[in-house]
Image 1 (cartoon, one colour):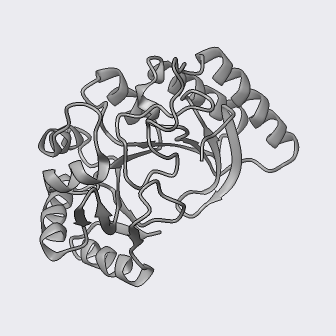
Image 2 (image 1 turned 180 degrees about the vertical axis):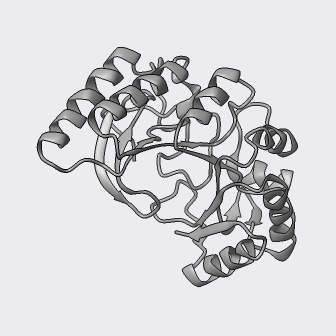
Length: 255
């Protein structure tokens, strides 16, 4: 599923409440630094046009102002403005400036709304991205496994990616972020993947304890996936994982 507009929704998010989505990525095309086996936007190769173009900063600002003004007039403002869309939002070259525009519009038109960014954390080497993420209410940053081979199998990064490097980049947030992890199991390209095993959990929990994020979100498949052999981890199992995280003194939700 690809988004065909800059602004989409609002939708009732199981994680965030009434969420107004912002898509910085090309319309009708996916652009991401991962090619996750569970991505609802599909495989990169199947959903990329010849010359994908980021949405322009001014177009984003205009569209967001229009939608927030309309929602304010209807008395139905969002709980959260969420950056997600057709890939990885922090890849946008004007990401920091767009976040500044969004904060200004939020303060003017929807002062109670939070700003969230769903990110795979691959752009944390860029200081402008880190600065922008530190200014939003909810930087929601992904780590699907603490074991390198599993992360590579699940996320299929499109460039150089190292779990150890990302963990140290996340450490620079001093806990002021939300860690998000997708739990799943299934076969892909002849390899059986399961990031719910005890070995996987212990490695991941050690990283969670080291980073001590302000909260953790654990979740599983909720929509169609490009890899058709994946299995959803049921709610009771997610809740058991969440309870073990809470035992570390860290807030955790199973969503």
